[in-house]
Image (cartoon, rainbow, N blue to C red):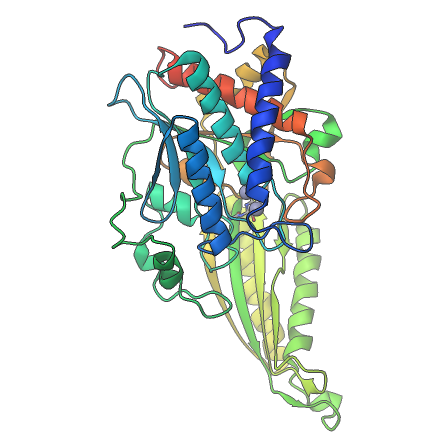
Length: 430
Ligand SMILES: NC(=O)NC(NC(N)=O)C(=O)[O-]
Ligand SMILES: [Zn+2]
Ligand SMILES: [Zn+2]
């Protein structure tokens, strides 16, 4: 087996041209599924545009000579069989879903890069020692239903059908109805999602921050992924007439909630980086100009690379919000609907990723991820590594999300090299 996918350094530009062409073709096609008027992409789990994107990817995978198959929750796999049918497969990919009015790269890039890499390896090196699978994970963001990592979590056993019972989206559509409506679910007769043995998982993703761009590095070698909590609060006061209710007699739920949000921001700033806290969703009832708001619900998304410091901050949030509600004669209910602990990437596989960057003369730097990723799920079950490519001005979860095609190709080149070494090499996964 040759040491590298490059038989000579002069082959690098030609391979970058090929990978850039293939990655951009897949990204452009996927961006058409859920293209919204704001110029971004909205492709939520189990919607028509989500299903159309998965079906288009299945056709692309088959067109590359891979065995395309959906599992019971709608994860899509494109498999390149290995010589050793018993050897645990190596998976690469990311999530197909997006946030509302998101960009065309978050998630989709990892799928496009994985497909370009495995297709190149198949064409040029034939059958690997162990199976290589490109995976389009059905959901990661938690944008439609109060459930995140549904795709990767179902594969590694951290999500199951009991957890989605009773969940509904903002329009009242039941999770289970949306899932069965797309032809998935427990009784759809598809392969079970849970996989007991996985050789490794490698995810390519946009950085969604500005470190690589600021430092002029091509690749982020991810060492760890931050932990995160998502909390939902309901503040209840008393709806009343905006014209006849004196200020001192009001129990204004929005005034109380806004004071809590200001306190949240001040405390997060006081505790300092890398702690972040975000109020992303706010709903006011009855939400009309001439009524004192009687009820407000809002979300808090809190993250930190240190699990203990994250837990302590969330305890402060709950304690402080309860005190502030009491002081105003308001009621407050809070619940944590999502939590993931910080997780390190596999040291050996990360070292191999870094070595591949060096051998390919692609600049790289080690870093942590403030964003959550499917790699966070797989890291509990198998050797997992992750690479980033730069995000222009660090922008993501926005129609302004952008990465240069050549930067996307460089990430795909490193991914191709790593998959070649661990998929075709004799040595066991280190
Ligand atoms: N890559 C992501 O944008 N992930 C997002 N989604 C989750 N589940 O973390 C996030 O908010 O960081
Ligand atoms: Zn995202
Ligand atoms: Zn993502």
